[in-house]
Image (cartoon, rainbow, N blue to C red):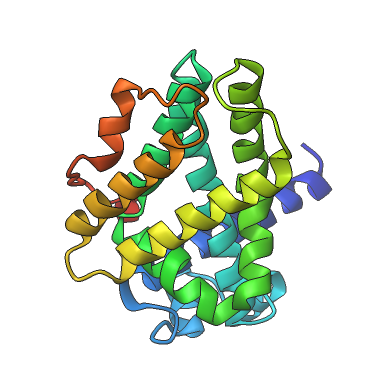
Length: 221
């Protein structure tokens, strides 16, 4: 390994460690009550090292949010590809996303602080980067299999993402979050069933409205 490549590896490791530490603090304390100097100290790096990677706290938060969205998209994709049928895959992906919204870390970072800290345009930009293609691919597969009528995919995908985003925000702000998950799951199941040409339901429709309890928060990751 050359000196240059070793330095690059060390730099990437430092950046990853800063993001990991910041995620824990942002999830636990929220953006406003997280001090950037504390992030540096707990990562065991100097303030200069932190500012070498991130220009300010907002920039660091943006990196945390970006990684969180990437993780969510992976969770959804893995749930979707576990089913051969396009419809069951789409339902499973939606189900996995709504379940993930019960994670306190996801609620705080993605659904509460990100909108306030980054603003709607930046929040939407990152969210779209990871989720729009997934939804469009699911809708295309459902159309190809004759489950839903063919039509403009882009606009339909944006509508579906908008509905799921509002469902997620509703869960995050609810006093009884498992009950909110159950409630919006029922609404999402009804909304999706309306897209089917035959109007029939899958056995996975019920998964969208089941009461859910997460045994372990991803905060520990």
